[in-house]
Image (tube, rainbow, N blue to C red; front, side, top):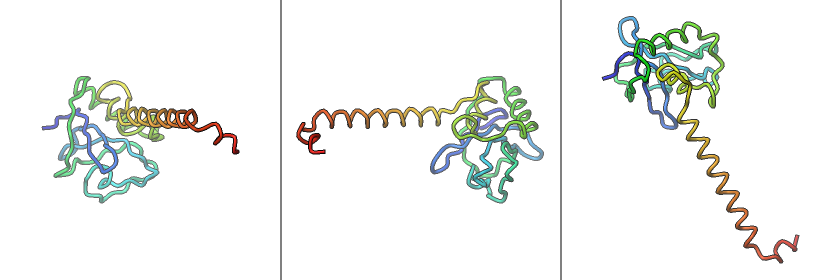
Length: 157
């Protein structure tokens, strides 16, 4: 069972979306960073009702945790009260927290900064490592190809 201050990870078909569980009026809420340029709705970002589309000025939003939403809850590394306080502080100061940036200021950076004390995105880190590995493999493949190509093939040009 999730507790206030937990980092919540919601799976989507292409990536994981993250937020922080906080108290809210009537029921628990999630504070999360979104990319307002995508016109992302609650339904797409985290499996909710999809009834609201974020306005262009919203970068950090606070929304009710919808009934039936599926997520993985990760306990914070910092005290729970500190994680909740930091998420609420960032929400209150959301105009200063923007702009959203996929590589350096995304939902995972936000959630981990609140719950671990430092902005970090494992998804971005893994993506960069994969891109470097693919690039290195392509470069090695090209060099091997060039080394194995007959000398006459390169003189035909």
